[in-house]
Length: 358
Length: 152
Image 1 (spheres, each protein chain N blue to C red):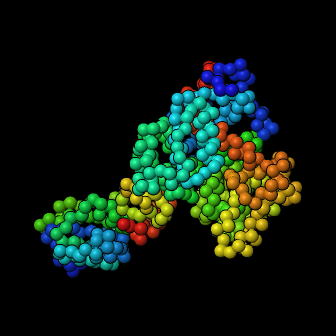
Image 2 (tube, helix red, strand yellow):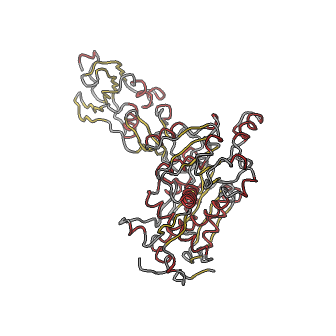
Image 3 (cartoon, rainbow over the protein chains, first blue to last red):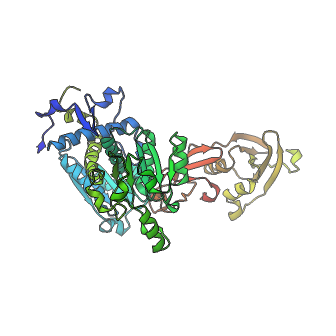
C-alpha cells in the first residue's frame, strides 16, 4: 500500500517498538529537536561514515526503524514522489544497487542509471567529472560505485546534487556500515557494550574497516578474528586503541563463539592466497557451522555483508542465529531513511509520524 | 653571514634554517638539479645555528621563489626562513608556513586513487600531523608519511 503521507489510522500506535526483546521508546518527537540540535542531512554528501556525526547516524537509524515499522504494516510513505535518483554503477553490484533502487521506488521516487561502466561514455574516454556534471542535470541525487578509491569524494567537487558513495575500490561503503549498525542495534537493543567479533578477511574487506571505526564510536566491544595473513591493518588497530576501544585479537573462530553477541562473518577471497592448498586450509578454519554455533549464546546473531561463498554453512541459515538475509533487507529501510533525509531533510520526520505534532 | 665563509649575494634568495641534512632535497625540489641554474647556487650543510644547533642553508642568486616552491620547502623543512635579497639588502624575510591542505604538490601513493587517474583534479592532502609530518589524501584517505618520495 502506498500512502500519500503517513497520516494514517496507525499513527497513534507508533511510539514504542519491540527491539531485541527490549521495549523502548522509538520516536516521540523528531530527534533533531529532542536533542536540541540543529541537525540537517538535507543536500549532504555521504562519502564516508565519518562524514556523519554520531547524532546524525542515530537519526538515520531511528528513521529507518520508523520506516521498518510502517513497512511491517505494508505502509510505504510516499516521501519522494517526483524525485529522481541516479545509480551510477561503474562496477557490478547486486545488493547495493537493487536495494537503493528498491528504496527509492518504495518512497515513490524514480531511478535512472546504469549497471556497468562498459555501457557508458567512460569507454569513449569521458571523465567521471564530466559524467557527474551531466548527471547533476538529470537527477536529484546520485549513488556511485567505482573501481577507484576516492571517486565519490571527487564527484562531490563537480556535482550540484548530493553524492552517496555506494563503494569505491577497496575504500569506503558508508551505507553498508549504516545497515550493519542498524541490524546490530535492532537485534541487540543497543550498540554500546555489545560484543562484536569481526571474522575473516579483515585486511582487504571493504566493509570491516569502516564498521570497526563506527562500532568504536558507539562503544561496542570489538574482537578481531583473522588468519595472520589477513589481519586488520595495524594503523586501524592503533586508531581504535587511541579511541579507547582496544580490540581483542584472536586467531581461532571457535575461541570467540561462546562470548560473542554478534559474529560478523566476511568472505575470504581465494585470490588473496599464493596457492589453493593454503586457501583451503585457512578458509576451512573460518567456516561457521551449526555444530560450532552450539557453543554460542542463545541470543547471538550471525551477520554477513554478502555475498557469502562457503564461510557460513547453508545449514546455519535455518538457525535463529542467522540474520544475514534480514540484514540485507534492512539495507532497504536504511537507504530509504538516508535518501529521504538527504533529499528532503528532517521535514520528512513529520510525515513519517503521520502529521502528529512534533 | 661572514662567519659562513660564503660571500653575500647581490640579488636572489637565501633559504635559511633548513632542517639539517635537507639542503640537497631543497635543491632537488627547486628543480636546480634537473634544470640547472643560470647563476650561482651555494649549499651550506651542517652550519652552527643558535635556534636549532645545526642547520643547512641554500643561496640562490638572481632568483626569487614562487609561492608553490615555498610550499614545497615547507613540507621538508618546516622551520626554514626565506630571505629575499635585493642589492645586498634583505628586502623581505618570512618563515615558510606549512599549509593545512597541500594541493598539487604530492602524489598519492595509492596507485588506485582517483587522483592518479586522468580526471581533471589536483592532488589534495590534509595535514593530519605536523611533527613528524603526516598527510592524508582527501580523496582516498590514504596516509602518506614519506612525503619526499611522493613529491611531484
